Image 1 (cartoon, rainbow, N blue to C red):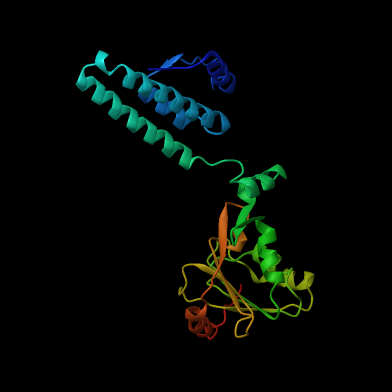
Image 2 (tube, one colour):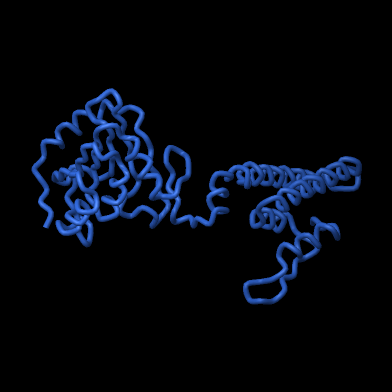
Length: 266
């Protein structure tokens, strides 16, 4: 059994003062070893860490007491107590090792403190961004060419591309499989709002399951990104864009797809 001190019990009561049914939660003063482990796995954060330390302190004291009073305990019971204590100490260490602190999530917490919801977060090269800003940052960095390989495109795809350099040559390889599809009327509206721009649309012919963004293809500045979701869905869910470090394996495939048939918007 493990008994909480009055201060520790009051802290837990304060942390768990109300239940989901509006009533007051009650916590026992005494826990079995299994109960202690369950308590530590449920509670997270600074308080849980203090309780884990308290658990270790109590069972260390118990070990010392047992060691000093071995003659009072049957040998079999002594062995069982020692084994159970070793298991519990290992469980507590595992909890502390897997515990995520606010410091570990500092970049995420800064975003949430700014009023962003988790659905708006996109992880670009390990750094959290607001989703729309992440795509715009990528497209702005292109010096001369932007290539998008994505079977699901929409007006948001065009909106992101509007933030690229006006001189950038833009190509979209897609089967336009979204529902609804990107329409010719929507593309013409984009051209009206962004004079001087032009996008080449090619069919992907169902060759690519994933989504990719390629910048400055065929130049020394070429970069490629693997996208966890279509840009048209940016902000709907948490997703990730990762820069591909070794792009040599992709170059031949990209050149081949640039010879695909034209995609006709309707």
